[in-house]
Amino acid sequence: MSKGTAGWLVTLARAGYGLGLVTVPAALIRLTGAPQPEPRECAVARVLGARHLVQAGLTVLAGRAGLDGPVLLGGGAAVDLLHASSMVALGAVDGQVRRTALTDAAVETGFAAAGAWAAATGPRNGAVSPRNAVSPRNAVSAVDLWSPLTINPPR
View 1 (tube, rainbow, N blue to C red):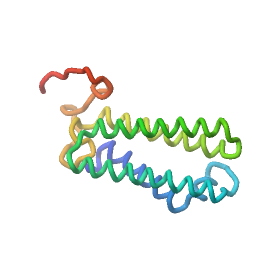
View 2: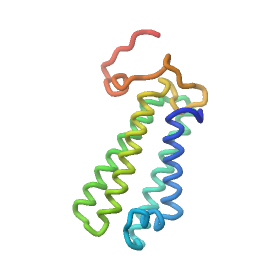
View 3: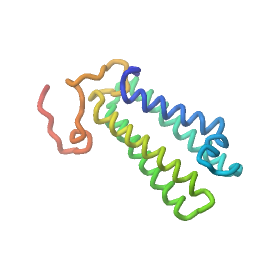
């Protein structure tokens, strides 16, 4: 994974956030302004943190295997948007965890935006692979990423 790529930075931030949720969930939940979280909230935060760690690990492994970075990062962005949507729904129905749920939704939306941006601006093949460097020659556009019918001219 090239440390200069946007994909690397998104993956590193995801791993750090996941590690924080797994190791010190109560401290992160209190940062939202919520009172001392219940054990159930900490357990849920640990599970979500593990999801972030798994997603970061799979992104690294797939990148090292040379799999297509834009699809990988775009897929991660889609997962983050689904997670954000579920947090908005939870916040709407459970006032007790509303602040924490909506804060997590904002974080997930940030990860989704960063992942989509990294997918759209990173190298075409293996955006998180050390074998590829970011250059205008192999960058993918948002149209290339989201349109399965796009026919790209030979480079």
